[in-house]
Image (cartoon, rainbow, N blue to C red; front, side, top):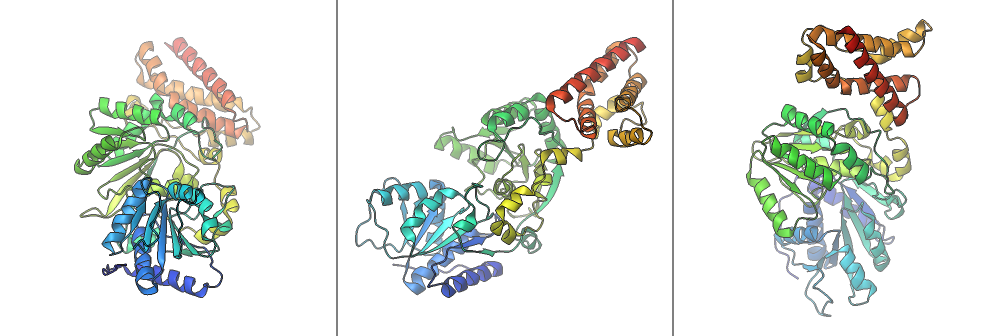
Length: 497
């Protein structure tokens, strides 16, 4: 055993460590399992490395640290070494442990260690503390049976299980909550966020067995030309020239994003789990050294990836996972050099679903009542009911001869109800207004029909709002209404010209 190095800690880190040790000492007899929450970027690895150092040095007890990926195991091992803690990484090449091995600290990937312990190839004796990194992943619980008489400390940014059916309060007795994101921002430990939200209709997305949106339905929506155009526009408006990380739900989407930005002349790379280790290393090296680099990826950079120079995070996907939401945004929250803030661009209604990234969260309530949290999540349809279409500047330029281009379906519907009119009269008024602004800006039929095509997104939004008003919001019904509307608009224009 050799532990000689101490590292300076921030005040909030030292306070959290004291709370954890006080809890462990006051529950020695119960062997309670404890969960510790700290925002991404707050230094969870620093905290549990210092806890490990003290356990080994002051208590002469062995510590086991579990991760869910080999990259995280190696990163953790390097951090422990910086703290002066000699450690052994138990990876696939390590089949057994010598009886008199000198190590007081082991770092292991969950699947590897589970195989060794089940096959009885390895015996982990005299472990005084088990630390679980990214404890919200349920793969770790299979190992609890081997450490029933050992204190288990889970560490996570989001104490919400990755599996709705296996809540964390079934495996952990208590939760200690670290500082909130806003606290770390005010103390200049995390960058502040500039949040930009673009409304996206998610009606075509499907929910999979894991409770999140399926990759296939996400690919159909986000690989579509209109969504790629919206993404490119959002980048130009809010992130042009900044180092940007784009998160997608599917490989197809990410590849299409790559082609879209490449064709537009931007320096971009694509990364997914099919890239070799060599390719990944080269791409991340390029991303690090290129100031205006754009990297489009498929979730693999949500954990175990730390690049403080990222200026912009684009969520080009929707998720129902609070953990994933914080993980994606957390990649941009590091402070470095002159960087004190970063940009978040949301193209999945995620901010409306979960709240702003830096808003206070009652983690104790979520930990104790996860079902209630899921039940209270805002539904996509309720989010979309609040959308108000705003014509993009470049499109508004096409209708520069018109003083007003907006039409509030909700307001017109309320007026119609007040006078006991037929609901279809609202769409007729909308058609009148679309026809009028086209006539004001189109000198001939060809131009008029071209402008009508440019209004298709506006039309879709009006149809959706109308369907909410009459409580008929099925996708097929909205498609029929939209097609009928477009057909009538074209007929009117051909008659006018």
